[in-house]
Length: 109
Image 1 (spheres, helix red, strand yellow):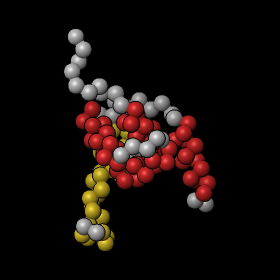
Image 2 (image 1 turned 90 degrees about the vertical axis):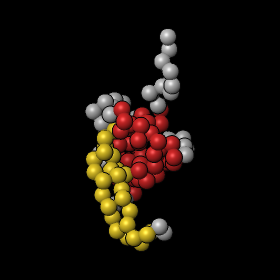
Image 3 (image 1 turned 90 degrees about the horizontal axis):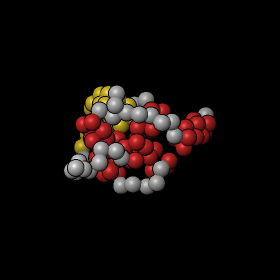
């Protein structure tokens, strides 16, 4: 009998893992921005859903939660959750990710 519900495997989550493998750690907005540059466009809500799901199944881990102060449209502080690759993740080494970060590193000099 087949298992019920959504399959645990997800291409979006795998792409996020590939990004985090190169980034080492990052927070949702930066991950989302990089994702949109490298992979086919998805809704930002999907990125956050897969970050949360990845934490639940151990493919992604929360590195730290940091509160930062500033001038935002909603107030004077923001809470950023930083993620890293989890122990259950399988990093395949996507060439698109490698090329994206190498080309951005060269342009920032």
